[in-house]
Image 1 (tube, one colour):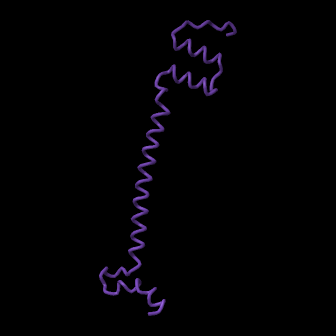
Image 2 (tube, helix red, strand yellow):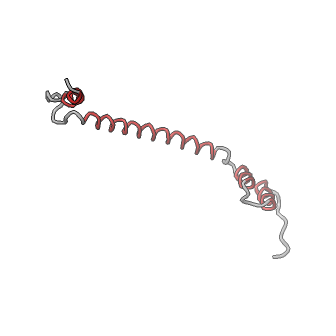
Length: 101
């Protein structure tokens, strides 16, 4: 038996029409399609879990106005004077009137 005859034997294995009209190569395409499908499902689940975990961690400590103010000051969004002023307002302390107005 020649090398060519041995190499073509798997391709002729579907010659008995056991798989309908699909031919012998379609099982590879269907297998790759199934792997792609399950890969996308697993990737979507992993992404959703990571996104939910990340969003919970991000908002966990920022539920109170004071914690949000602390976060804004720590990130540099507001100045120290503005932080003290807003902290006093949140604490209910009376504010001095600005004489320039």
